[in-house]
Image (tube, rainbow, N blue to C red; front, side, top):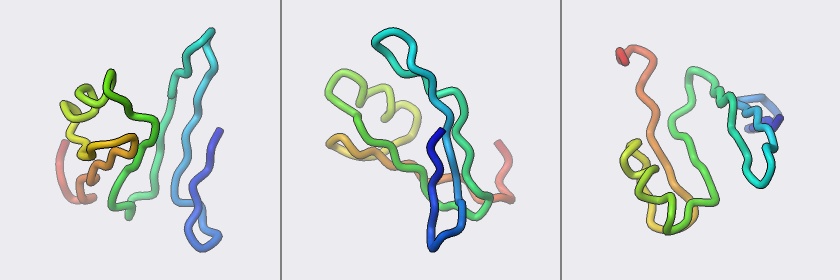
Length: 73
């Protein structure tokens, strides 16, 4: 489990499992007032996948703005 903090407050977290030579991200959670989600490790092979999910970025760090709390999914 990884926990994200800001000024000593927990603002998010993730649970990941190591499966053979891969890592499966099982849960990602962020506090309702979070504005963006960042992920690292994007490469030429998987960057297109993240772009299709709405992430932006050109190198290994990708970013996606989160919908506001009042937005419907």
